[in-house]
Image (cartoon, rainbow, N blue to C red; front, side, top):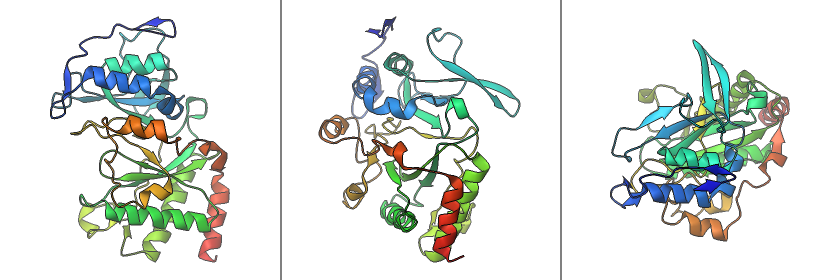
Length: 299
């Protein structure tokens, strides 16, 4: 396959990656090729962690941060510091790279919350809503409580299913604060919501102390942490897909974390504009967010 002047040797397209549905490696590659315009804006300039399953989701999968030495030279990478050295991360800014990585058995893309040009300064804050059971209703309730609280602060938020069990509520940031500042604001917001809606939220990190409540999880908001990239396939039966939603859609009780998958996602994308289109226009400074939260608290 030739894409943007790069020849990619596509192989083993008939290999079954999802046994129950008989979805093949070729189906995965075709999906990422066809929706590249949707996923690439979410991948652009972000260091990636690849979740690869070269023999399908029932085989041995692995997470990959370090770019393989056999990746072609035209694949963009960025060497970044870690505690005990450096990691040379893959950067996926074009369709050719996306298809190459899919051909390597990449099922899911996990991206940093910052971009390479301002790596220590996140441009989004992610609140991870992972339910204590398989019941998505507590996620729906929690997401709307967060949205409504942020709207009281005159802050716009964005929503995506994870394709697994929960959802992410995302606040776009202006990229001028560091991860500690971002996480501090997230913690303060979580403390406020957990006190106000103590029947829904908890900030208890230990599962045995959550008592069936939803953990207000802001732990992804740290240097080198990642979140699933919107429009990524998840390595789960039926090939569910992390799908951005508009808030009205979440009111539909039939919607859950795995509502969209390899069977129905293209129909959705052909009928609906990306709910996150233009999201960067709603980016906030962390000091502004902190002041708005203080005002809401009456401080």
